[in-house]
Length: 232
Image 1 (spheres, rainbow, N blue to C red):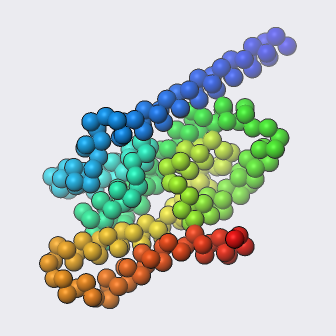
Image 2: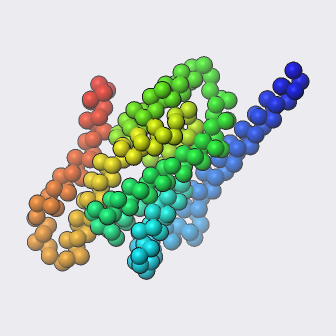
Image 3: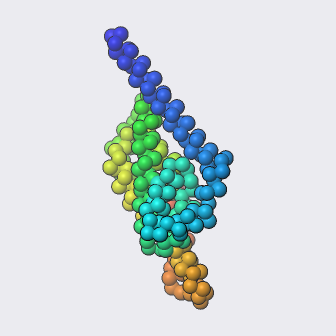
């Protein structure tokens, strides 16, 4: 009995220590990009100049930057727009999607490794049923939250605190961000191509109007999804 009590205390202390490390990581990550000189190197101009000098390694470096950027709360719109502007609508979409998936996976495992034990210890009977429901319907839950544009980085870490299986989280995320990622990169990439060509007459082309239409449509996706689910 005493041994069991000691094990419980050790387990609780370990969970608290991990939670403290997790909280410290989040505070440090946010502080790095807001209150230190590092933020000067995390602008679209600075990252763009760096990637333009990377040659063939630019796509790999961009995806690594995106991965780290997601974990340190760098705005996804900045990284996505940068990818589209440098690599174009189609390759930009591919590199952005891969980078986002790597970042989402890394943040999930950070949350799962450092915060899950402590989160589980705080879950009472009322919250446990929601945690169990997420485990049973992990793919559908993640897919829905991605489609309604739930904040990307907080969700990555937050899902790691739940019982959702990584496989379902991964595929739910991969499918859920495809539409929004493609629309945004296609829009930015198309405008970039027009800018680079200097042929402003292309601004009235079908491709430009189509990209603008998709971009506007993206703002209605959350409402459409909620309406399909019967929400107001």
